[in-house]
Length: 463
Image (cartoon, rainbow, N blue to C red):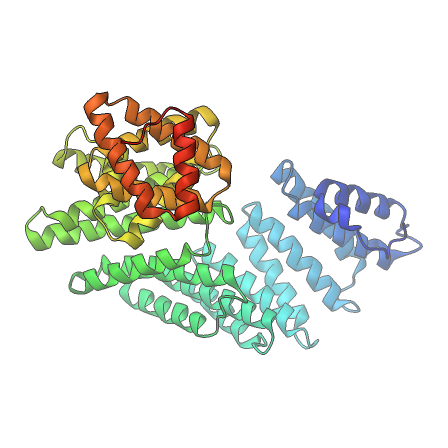
């Protein structure tokens, strides 16, 4: 393979194979005889090391830096300013990931300076955006905002890439403002996020769309804590923004971002519960409903966070869950989390109920077989605690199951069947009547027949 050949599609999908291929290319490209080709391959290999998701992260980043050192020594900034700048920018990213933000900021700035005057506006803007990120992390907010301002002015928003770059930079600027924490800074942050939304096409840049809404929610939440008179409205806006971010930050597509958005949405609901308590003297349905919403969101967040990889985020989410669980326990001692979920889902709107049940059932079905059967049975039993309104939960569950692969119906219905059989003859009859009514209410003719036939096959008798 010559040094000018591209990595094969197979290698591109396999980072380890891609690295091995580039390592072979580098050895086959003599530095003395073909210096520029050698530098190009070294740069590409450095990127492959730095972006590899498999292996020891620190070791890979240091290998990347070693490759960038080789490339930077060959690409002379006097004669190859653009190539040298690209290498510096990549090296800066490695140093930032390794925690040396001062070094990273210096390299990003040098790269931006080298791009200047060479008609590489988007690349210079990207480097300046990186300067801003590093400066923000160093606590140098004014310098960060200046870098973001310069970067935002350079992106060509007539192109899709330019619009994405502009939006990302404006969001980063907003987050830098927000980190200052003052009312004035939060107002500037909100202005940035609104500006980003004005230039954003959700279909063209879905990740950025979700990120802007998540950032908007965080800024509204922070401002709500500083403006008591506007607190209810700001918390409503925060919750709506977090919910909108979750339309893109899905459990399967962006699990970590989904968990963070869920936690922040839970915090917004918990704050809304505090507002409700202040308005009605400490009690009331609105307070309890918002506490239950918060609890459900914290549970969803914790279920996705790995205690080894996301230790700090997990601890925060668990502390939030424990606090809300304690508040609910004071009102209804002995009520489990699952029962609190069932009470919430049974007493809210159909739209919210469907969203709650869909999220919970899909999450439980993704667990190992024994665990999911146990938890689905627990959910079915909790639904029976709400009396006749259990039919609403059963209907929602059946509708969700009809959206999923056929095998999930087997698992869920067996779990519900076992739950109904465990509550005694009288309780079983009442539960089965509600289930039969739910089948009739939620499903169409063929679906009803299929569901009842399956239940008959495992021993269910229609009441």
